[in-house]
Length: 481
Ligand SMILES: *Cc1c(COP(=O)(O)O)cnc(C)c1O
Image 1 (spheres, rainbow, N blue to C red):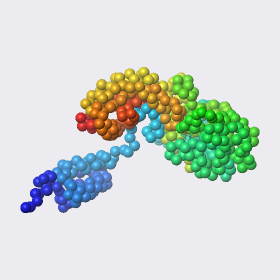
Image 2 (tube, rainbow, N blue to C red):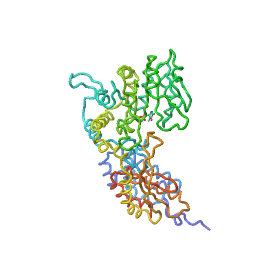
Image 3 (cartoon, rainbow, N blue to C red):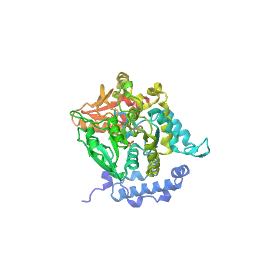
Image 4 (cartoon, helix red, strand yellow):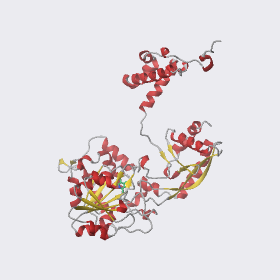
């Protein structure tokens, strides 16, 4: 007996010979319209890629004939082109509860920074041009004054990020010589930035002193010899050593260094330009405190608590910053005009500290009151519940968020949000993953976190709820409820 025809059983399958040639595909009116809009290069290359994919499936006997209908082919081509032109870098909603999230682009820029950035990039600017004298200027000049005013330092320079600032500081002040650091401060920050490796890259020899939990002034004093170039303190930004501990503070290390005619540098990591305690937040060391303590060099990030663009800020004495600025490696690590424009506008906001918690998004988000966030969660609960029922239940919960980016690792930010739980506890892990994936697949992806068998939406990061609410129908559709 003959086998039943496959196409009768499974629907008709196309064969490779049924595929149209690229030319024929492009001659159709719908494709011609795409060519008029996007040009021949992109449309032809996507048409070839489309046909290649279809051919492979046809050869494998897996291509439904319906996909070769002219209308289906044209729709597939249009979809490919749209996907090809869609940006890979996209805005998302950060509902993770971590305000300065390194994977989500760290600090949000202030309106003033966005506007200045756009205005400066729209045409030529005086990046390295002295408008008063009519000659060559220095890009450091854009922010040096501001940084000196805000930190009390004599001089300042800026590079691409704080990792670059640390590398450059060590290379400029200690290449070929020794740098003394406490064993309690040999930090690793994400992305393979480890203090011992940075030392090696900068061509300096790391001299470790003290122990993991205790380092004393005498440890530094004993380690100093004729090869010593620099004493350094690194802010342990992403962990805390607790219990039987002792460390020498910046003032103490600076005193020891200066007694031997050596400079002292500190890597603050985040560094806040205002005292966060004044806003009801945990205190984070400030560059101004460290300058006052006698540090010759203080470096910190532009896009952590400062709330600006990616940048590495170096402030300190004229002598030390001058050596850093003249060091050839500086040219390879220099800041681009884009973040520099945003940085200038961000720093300017600090000249009006009374307005800062309003004007600077990082501080605005960090100072949102838990009661206000809870009220927002209560307002959204019914709409979110309607989008995910009957598969999931939604409740308003108190949450603990964090500042993020290694700032203040042990402190938690009291917050609030929505917890979404699968109604059926069997296979709830899969149901949670499906929900998280559906949220990430929205046109404006929503990034949540999963903990204790619940998906948590921390609403501290949601200043304008409308874009979130507008997507709830799409979420319901994605979950095919
Ligand atoms: C974050 C951090 C850095 C790196 O700063 P980037 O601006 O991310 O390059 C260096 N040191 C410490 C202590 C940090 O916390």
